[in-house]
Amino acid sequence: MKSDPKKLRSAANAAVDARVQSGMIVGLGTGSTASWAVRRIGELLSSGALENVRGIPTSETTARLAQEVGIPLLSLAEARPEITIDGADEIDPNLALIKGRGGALLREKIVAAASGTLIVVADDSKLVDALGRDFLPVEVEPFGWESTLEALASLGCEPERRLIDGDSKNPFLTDGGHYTVDCTFPSIADPAGLEAEIRCIPGALECGLFVGLAQTAFVASDDETVVMQA
Image 1 (cartoon, rainbow, N blue to C red):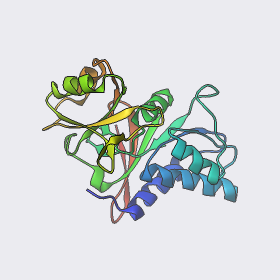
Image 2: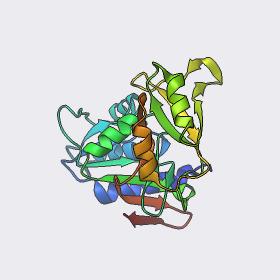
Image 3: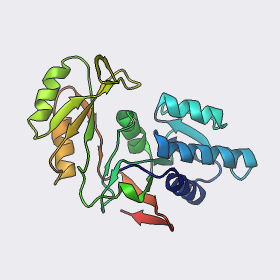
Image 4: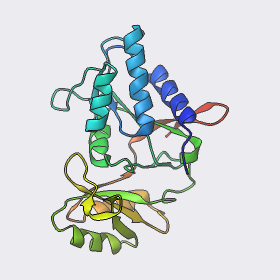
């Protein structure tokens, strides 16, 4: 389901205004939703409403946007984020997530896990009763990827390597040089269990199931932005 840019901006602005304070180190997510949060932090730094906020980006695209809007950047070698603000592709009632359709799930999960708090921003189209409405991305090592797809298929999904413009000779590559495999499951009854199973597959570097990481979600509808707590 397509998101509403106005709702995404409202959710991102609400999250930044409520949770980002001067002096913080903030993990900066990737994707259209997270970009609104990056822009909002830049606006508040420019106006002087925030001071000395530094960001740890989850992708090269986010790093470039942060630099454009005036957010100084750090790496995880230098510091840990106090909070991370990121989007989500699906959010269940327990704040278990599917992420990674923007192609940065491994770095997003590394930064989220290093953070004290993961805050999700989304519109109400991302809310689901159970995860698995659409596909689950998995970041995969290119070496032996055919074998990895077979192992993923054995879990009951239909895996498909992500391509650029449908060209089999032009696979989508993450910033780390990895493939992304989009896995369609009939349903995901046990997100934590499936996450553990995927992690046991050699070559499957990480999956887009974010279970037990998000504490808060700011979710915008037509009328308001609701704050959900895990």
